[in-house]
Image (cartoon, rainbow, N blue to C red; front, side, top):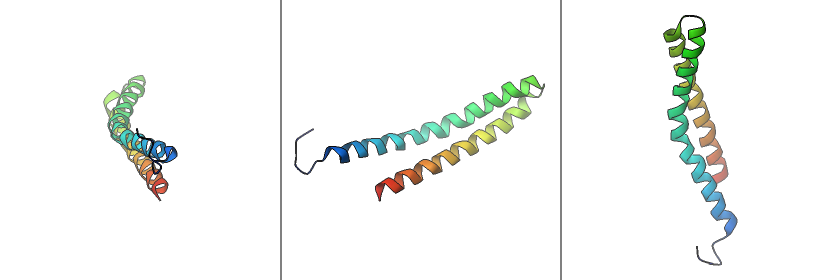
Length: 81
């Protein structure tokens, strides 16, 4: 990194933070349904319905991932203004 007068350190760290938040989005979209499915299967195994509750967990995990992604996108947009 160069010591340019126009390169302010807070702006650089802000951009890195926003990039980190943006890179978390694909991870959230991939992991949330998996966690929901396996958690649903585990809970369903307690009630002898692992597949049915696993599918419900998958749907709930996907919905939670989309909700969190929307929240992160709004956060990024508000910090860019």
